[in-house]
Image 1 (cartoon, helix red, strand yellow):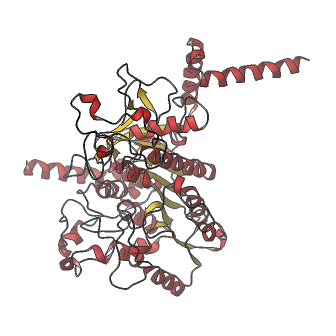
Image 2: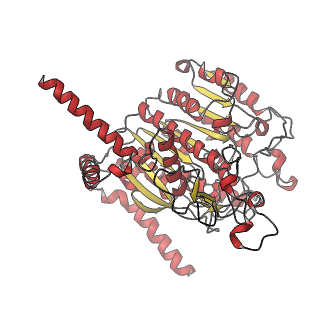
Image 3: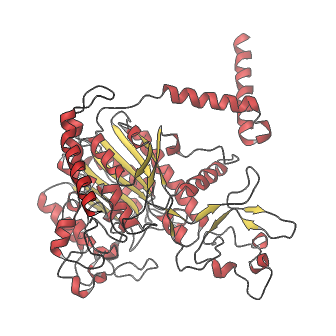
Amino acid sequence: MKAILIVILLMVLLQQGSASDTNWLLQDTDYWIHQGTKDLKEALERPTIGGRAKNVIIFLGDGMGLSTVTATRIYKGQLEGGLGEEALMTFEKFPSTGLAKTYNVDKQVPDSAGTATAIFSGVKSKFYMVGFDVKALYNECDQEINQNSAVTSIMKWAQDAGKSTGFVTTTRVTHATPAALYAHVNHRDWECDGSIPAKELHCTKDIARQLVEDEPGRGFQVIMGGGWNALGTTKIEDEDESCIRLDGRNLINDWKKMRAAEKVKYQYVYDTESLMGLNTSDIDYLLGVFSPGHLQYNSLRDRSPKGQPSLVNMTSQAMKILQKNENGYVLMVEGGRIDHAHHENYARLALQEGVEFDAAIQLVMSFVDTRETLVVVTADHSHTFTINGYPPRGNDILGLANYSKLNYSYETLTYANGPSYHYHRLDGFTEPNNTWRNVAVDDTRGRPYYQHFSPMYMDDETHAGEDVPIYAIGPHAHLLQGVHEQSYIAHVISYSACIGPHRSLCNNYTSGATEINVWALLPLLTINFIFAIKYQLVC
């Protein structure tokens, strides 16, 4: 009888907890003291993980600034039946959080090419530049300057250490972010020969050729995303304005011939059925390309067997292949279409892409042992996307921020600029708030391609320049706490995994929590001293 009463009491308490999560009127002093105590105990009991990262997985939410994280969290919570604000994304439970400064060396507000180069190489670059430091020329190829300006990425470091490498993206595999893993070009749009100015063709290879022909691209064991056009398989004029090859080459066939000559186990896949039907235990190299340009938004994609796979599908299969290497692996997963939705003011699609991105992270966390795997989640830049007004708790995050006495309703999620201006603008009115469409009676607001409000017209909504979050778990994740240059992320990966420029520092690190071999630091201190003297002379 006593046991039954205890069970009933526990059920009542659980129901009360659940009710308090969906009814803010129940969230009194006791609720918040309990919530704070629980979080504090978890923080106090959470160990700092040292050692060496056998594996590294970096998740990059393209355009996923803090406002996008917050809005996606609320959206996810509301999809699950909660008020929304109390929810957490999978990566928000990671123990270490920091901020990255995103500027390019020549721009206060950056683009993805320069930021991805910083994240993956540890060296900040120029706007629209891939894989070069500041010395390289924008939109102009000089072989000597390029040779002296090229930087190496975490993928090259990993391959040199005997690890497996790969990437998964919802963009073209030649797009700016994945390109920074393996390519060196003076303009991010040089994805195929058809986009390179004629006078520069003799000087450089396009991004697609570098992926298939050069290191570290040809060494990737997993490549998945879109981009048939850039690789020469199709010549389809698509909405993504994908680059069309002019040299007649089919680089997917070239990739297959190269693998056959190496006598390795390889597979090329092109739809969900061929991807998910793989026997991953019998594959060493996988190339998956699923569209002429970018992959379709997850909520709109063809979910039939002959359609495009989800980010979760691709990540799952990538993990199964890469984790077979006893030396470990480095994987990059990009939620690339968060950014594209924002550029078009498609707030709903941006949040839906964010939820899918989080689902891929949740999947990976079920695969990995964080005692030997460093997982980093970050963004390359933010957007002019804001959460505004004074909507009540639990209000639909995609809904309206107010219903004023004058009926001037406005949306909680808006943009500072973008293509939606013309849709929302009403001409011929003089009173300030009457110059805009009444969103409260707009029956198109629930559609995927509905564009949220923008007060300034731009063909594409722009990026924003504030710091972006970094979330980390695994060996030496605590090194990412604080505010850092975006390029610092690669340095932590190098140290944690004992690959690349900080391999010697890692190998000389002793077992003590803060004890470091001073002699191992000498080369680094010398370099810093030289740069300090050089800087003083220049100034």
